[in-house]
Length: 171
Image 1 (cartoon, helix red, strand yellow):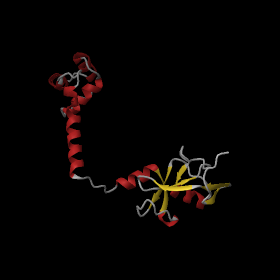
Image 2 (cartoon, helix red, strand yellow; image 1 turned 60 degrees about the vertical axis):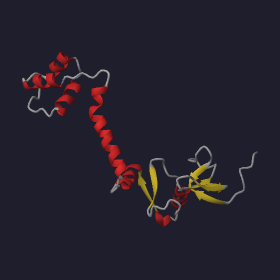
Image 3 (cartoon, helix red, strand yellow; image 1 turned 180 degrees about the vertical axis):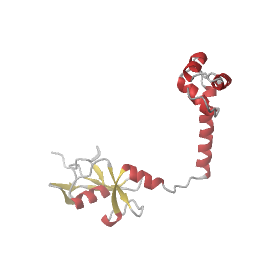
Image 4 (tube, helix red, strand yellow; image 1 turned 180 degrees about the horizontal axis):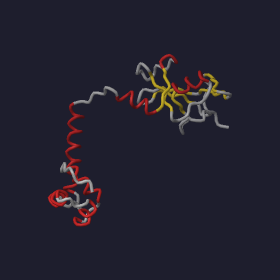
C-alpha cells in the first residue's frame, strides 16, 4: 500500500477518526487539510479546514448546502468563535449587502444595460414592428391577433407593449 504521508494529527468527526496528513493554503487564502478519508474531500484529498473544525466540534459532517462563514472576514482565522454556520443564500446575501461597486464596474453595468436594451435591433430575426404594435394596440386589437398579423410571438408583442409603455388594452 502506498504511503499517504506522515500523520500530523488525528481528529474525530462523529464515529470516524481521520488522520490529517497535510496542510496548505489555497490561492483564495483558505487553509486546506489533507484528509483523504473524509467523505467530502476534494479529488486531491483536501478539505477546507474551517469546515473540518466545525464538524469536529459539532461531532457530525456538514452537508454540502451549508456554509461555514468567517465572522471577521479573515479566511485563515479558523477559531471556532470566528465561525458561523449558515445556508448558501444567507451567505450570499450577507456578502452582497452594502457592496460598493467601483466606477469601472458601474460603467460596465451601464454599458451592458444599454446593449441589452438594443440587442433586438441587431438580431438577425429582429422585426421593427413598434409602429404596427402601437397602432393595433391603441385600436383595441387583442395581443394574439397582433402577434398573428406581425408574425411574431405573443411574448414579443407583450415586450414591445411594455417597451412602448402602452396602457389600456388588456385583451
